[in-house]
Length: 291
Image (cartoon, rainbow, N blue to C red; front, top):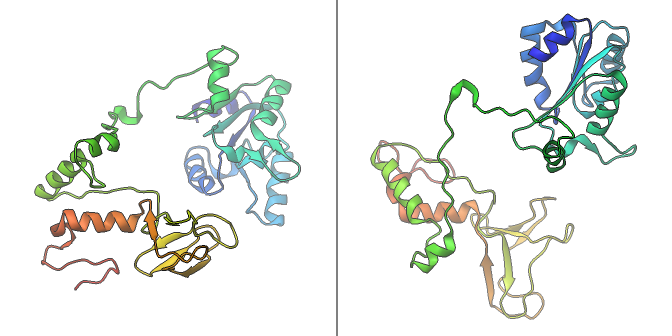
């Protein structure tokens, strides 16, 4: 915002790109509160043809000083360009896979060379190519050495579960995680466990012939959901009933592999049965009903 203000002060314009349309309203609110609505134009694919035309004309006639939008906003007809800022520059959405194919970062680089203005690529986790160019001093690397409001970094601990297994712990939870959850419960605090796998098991396989149940549409492994006793595809929504015999060899040696949120929930209930009771002593079950 400070850089854009400096650009506006010398009579030039700015383009700000964000990776997703969903981020545009959030970014827009911040800029409107500082610069005013009349100075800002918005361009993204969710606008109607009429809205897009109005914004395009507003930019072409020089009525807006700041253009905010997703990757297509890089083609805005901005005259007297003073700076281009690409937020979350590592995001793959800046590359268009549909025809005409283009990389918004490459287009931005060309525009900045033509207009003799700076290009700012912002990211907490830079693209490898960008970071390599910075290390080779092809571009300038600017580091933020402090977090917002001078807050400290959270403590992060990586635990090797293979070592836990070697020490005799066959649970899904490491001993450190178990101790942390137990301590939270004693202090009447809450714990959030993140697991990026839905369902109970991530795939079902026959131990006799190695056959894996797959989606008939996507050809990827079906996920077992224990509550519905269904096999589901998380891409297209296809589902089928749980099989008890292998469709290939007719063996009954069907086994469940991988871990999903339902399996984790089952393990937590087993390890910490009191954690699923509310303050009135009622158990809070999965269907969000008190029993």
